[in-house]
Image 1 (cartoon, rainbow, N blue to C red):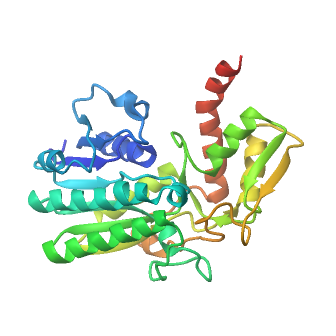
Image 2 (image 1 turned 180 degrees about the horizontal axis):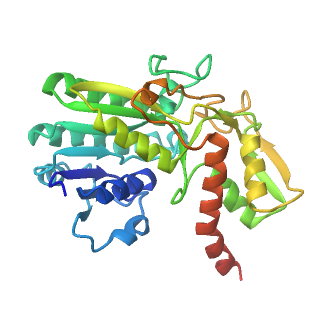
Length: 325
């Protein structure tokens, strides 16, 4: 068993909790820092009592505590962030504080304590609305949402700290990661709407919005693969399934998984067919770079959506039936 202590910020969240599972399974001692703003203790309840895991309810905006609890850390997986893209339209300050300020504080704590390795959860949203898809890592960074801008700003901070202080850092620009424990995004939204009314589904946008989806198990494997190859300086990798799917197709898959028929789709488009301000009409990722490390996804976008819908339905469907009785 390795004695390295790995810090996972946001380790009670969707992706972060799955990263924690993988690291603990591999024998690492893991410390979670999470302020429970979007993370949930139930995501790691199966790990509670494991001597290899420490869970701290700390806010990354608390600089003193952050410095204290990074003193004995060797590697940081930075997954703490506000994940709701739509929030950036109504309350952009949240993404400044929870994403940019929190990342700055973390980098300062790492600098003070000579922590050199950082894996950062970025997003395909940094690319904004590209002219052509799929995009590779050399595509222009032109975010159209405050969320995307916050991730791009974090990447710039991380790159600067890498250049100045010799950190080993990597930014993973994830496509839409889906699977069990997910409690936001289109799949969860559609399932909860259809549980409430199985005859009618409101779809934000015109249904033609295009995205790449990657199943959580594939995303975690890609993450560990990239971390194992981390080198001095700053690097970027796209992490996705290599293909894409539109929102109408997602609705069809979820209706099928839920064994529903004759569902009426009600579209709510704005502007050029997007669902909300800051929404991207078409985005998909090239993944040639991460494939060269020996990783490849087991599921394509359709397979990821289908399996995620099945697993999320298992998690939330029973509770819905209990509360509706």
